[in-house]
Image (cartoon, rainbow, N blue to C red):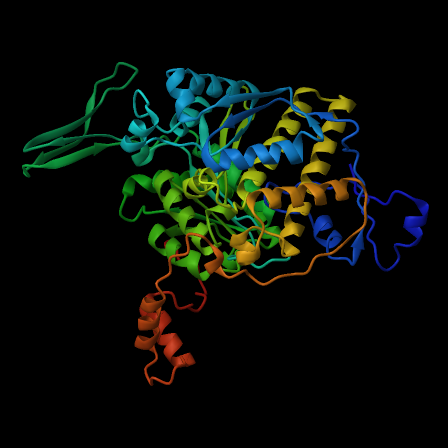
Length: 542
């Protein structure tokens, strides 16, 4: 697979204003371009070559498509209809409707079927779904409140980690300058907790070994309050080694510095997570990281961060270029913070990685945001909407690429299967480029381009037009590079400007309407986010 000029005349004219790319373009994961693509789209003009066309559809490899509801379901249908099915035969995709009414109608059999299919096929795209509240159960006429499908998926697919990475649009500044990776342990913690309300008495937590050996008490405590809530949960650690390999390999691939996050100084039971990660790192990855220079910022050691410190570093390290791995709950909270620094959850991926019985990886890709109910209400009312589908599209790209990879692994040496993978890699790389360039031309959705931005439907049409031009080998000019769009373009922008003025006035000590460097330093110091000098020796817990 390659982007290349198609004619001798074009080759001769490419000296100063076109770029020829030879060899394959290798995907660097769902959120990054290869260096070839980066240099490719910065020249004055380009011409692209692709074997994907509307005249001869490619049969897409098997994949599970999980349909959700509301605005993201509507947008996904537009994307599939206008961006994918014109080029691909998707008859091998298996679709499962996980809308609330479908789950109710089948008594949740559809969820069981979807989980089984995901385990069998190994590549899954999932639209955002609704976990109905008590009010929604009544409004939809459901028989009961169905729980989130995520737990069943993580269990059924032997979930190891949830990878959440920043999405970057080349040529537009966002929150983090370079990519940030995150691995969130997919199992254990508070999410699977058992609990009950109790009164005065004694609580015993007893462990019964499966090998028939004597049981023993894990914890005993006397409860003296008349009203308490008791909570019991556990953290499975068998798959932490798998998490470590996934994390460190991805950090090397994306050229970022790894950090491990726990609260082990207080929660002593978290020590095992850190120790396992460090053992795998020291034994199999440390030398490579040192050779590549990726540990220079951490004194050539794998650094542990206390979760409190990690929250502050996420604000300070806006240059990006780092990765973090943490327990389930910490990972959930910290990735929400990353999303806010990097503009919004729409600019973060969410990929569940599990492990099948034969050792192959099961990967489920979805946007990290919800169904966008407010825009759906506007759509139903006949009002214009402007949904940014970036997260949805990155999930679709990731799922299609993984499906193609699995098909190659299952058919080694099959040239036709490898050609399909090449075509999918060409197509998905070109799709990403067409979408990103549409933003850069100022033709994005309103969260990026302001009130004059495109509607949901018009943006999809514009990208479809640009994608067709690129795939048909037409010449296009490079779009401009843009500064970060104003965050008040976001429809959920709720910053209290009066409160900000009060804070400004508090630190504008001489009341001259400006904050000097001394006043600014004082402000950052009080907030606990002032940059500090690099310590000459590594501190084990920072």
